[in-house]
Image 1 (cartoon, rainbow, N blue to C red):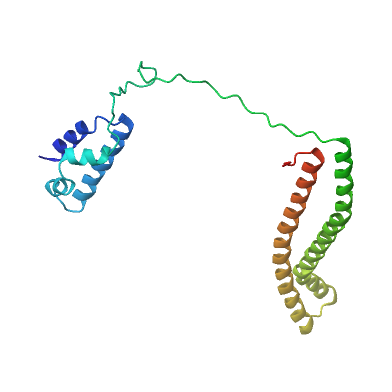
Image 2 (image 1 turned 60 degrees about the horizontal axis):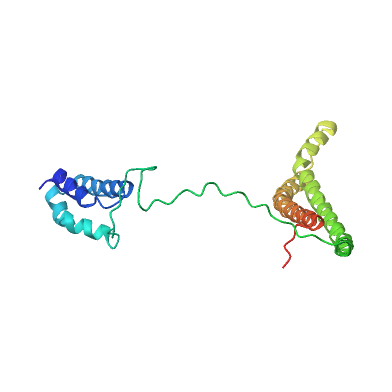
Length: 207
């Protein structure tokens, strides 16, 4: 028995499977043969390793042997086990719980005090970020200022040159810190705003 005969016999033993699953298994075994042949093994060695096609098919089928005949004629074919298509499921519209006037007044009062605390805190964080960004820009542009001073006065002091190098290094560090800080403050601000909006609209989950 060669490779073609073995695969043809295996294909017939797998006839109880759906065509898609059977074809997938056959592609796996064909790939197994191809890989073995590429590595110097013979078809006989692979056939001996896999065993008889009937036993291999029995192992692949397992407990999925049908108790009643199943006909795979494709979609729309008549079958005794045919289940009618229920059709598309209509979308479910979420229902927002109604909030009374007293609850609304309490929510707005609570949000007012929360905004008094969180609002200035966010403004302080953004002010700190602007300060960091300004210092970073100042450190990075300090060489240009030194160059303009040299062009204007025609003198360059060594102490100022070392100071400018230090400012550039500090500017780079502050730029990295300000970049990461910007992401954190932005996410915090957007999260607070989203929560604030959901609370005002009454879209919270009530248990």
